[in-house]
Amino acid sequence: MAKNIKLKQLADAVMDQTDYCGAILLAEPAGTNMASTFLRYRDTNFLSALNQNEMDSERIRLAILGGLRFGKPVVIDAEDCDLFSAIEKFVDNVRPGLFGEILSNKIVEPSCFQSLIKPTDDPSYEYSGSNTMNYDRFLPNFRFIVYMRKEPPAEWAAKFKNVVKVSN
Image (cartoon, rainbow, N blue to C red; front, side):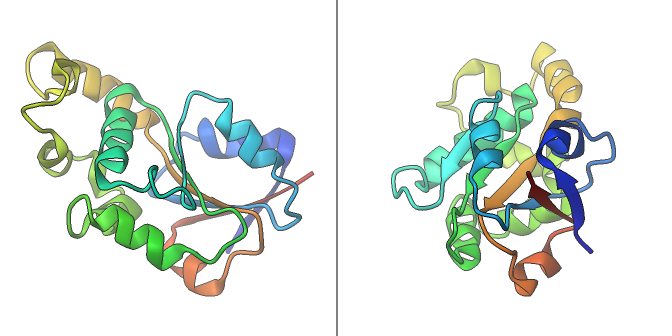
């Protein structure tokens, strides 16, 4: 069941919710792109599903890892296209099964996200020492949002625990 909100409620309903339990499918059926603009200018890791460079597995890995480490939402903008299978494939190219771990919110478990960290990454991404406290502090702020400017297809909505429709 989708939650219907007004644009002015977007921050509270999506970004600041305290009961986040898995990925959010955010739909703006009117196609105005206002929710996308709002998310783009917030402190998010914003990726366009239509941009091949932004769907590179390394770019997605760093966006997710940065979202976990610094408590930033990861937003994938599908625009008005039916790209669910492609987005799932792009995310799973980082590591098989990763998309399912994100949908179920298993990704916030250290045993799950530590495999995303590479020895060549910036030291601030390491899960050791004082960085473990930083991860623990910011993990509750992590969000994974797939945004689309149309009515969400039923097959998409069935896979997400949180479906939010925004209108003006």
